Length: 460
Image (cartoon, rainbow, N blue to C red):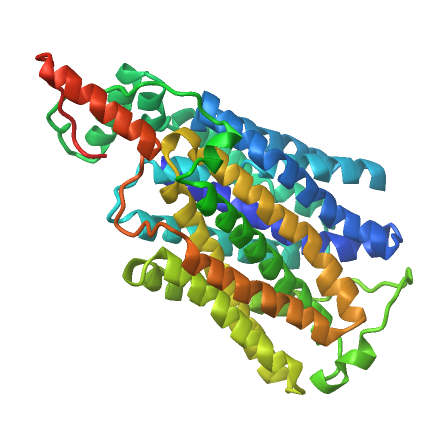
């Protein structure tokens, strides 16, 4: 059930992101919106996501992964459906912002899923689930190709909520994380969850007695800045920011740079424009968008192998460095085919980097603040996504070379930051608490054993 939930959530998240690239041009023409109002439709979604991500992380750390995830997805489904009935621009803007507020909780599905996985296969499983992001993006483009010419954008928004409705149905069978239940002192519920998992897998429960560790305050931002984690937190925030900044940047750069007839005349072609003149997306436009989106799959396959052989840190660095390397040829006057190839490779690797950081972040932080770490990191990603249109669309019209330099430099720094991360999580079990608290627990256990009380448990 946790796999199905995480997969449907990834699919829906990707579909909502792809809607942004389809809805803008359509409303630009239908409602005769100026360019800045079209841009606001995208920006308001990322603003909502950035504000809500730490909030959903805090809720998930305090009240449970299942509760936080269920509420945020029901929220997204409700306002996603209402968006299809928005009568005017103002209402659409408000409703899409509320949709973004709900999507901000989507990374918590990875938090929940990771807490059910053994260390040996955790990276591969999370990466495979991430394939549903690419599937969702491709599905949304195909759905738009079918729906938009005849039924229009309202039907597209409505039908795009189907994966979310499926997710909400799965929530009735979704188990709470046993790690969270142990952390909050709910020993019996944790045992029930583990017994259910063992039964479904046809395995017997391991021998031993479950130890309920001392309960601590959960979901506090200060816990991310303890001596053990402050460096990891700051580096990861920059990595998440750079990843989203570059990922959405290359998506926007693709259409912007292809507007020129050839690479040698880009500077002349990319003139500033505030005109209300518009053109609807054609079937060829959707096909080009589909080809670009398919770059997600080869990137995932390459990183799927790398993450288990060279580790999380070096895989992240590889993604950022290859992205920067593929940006360099764009400075020269290359043909359209070569331009397509380099952009395809760049998107493949920056997409792969996104999946690696989704694996690494829940692995490196303990259960008591794992959801908050995911939430705050996701908020930094949304900040990068919010800023990137001003670089990929506004700055590009002033200087192509400066724009490319910003993306290239940002990813070079992110690659270095990846190598500077203090902890490699390959083969490492999930931690229930910080090192200091774990040491205190071990001391308590030792004292109990000295007094004649013996506890035994398997390594999580």
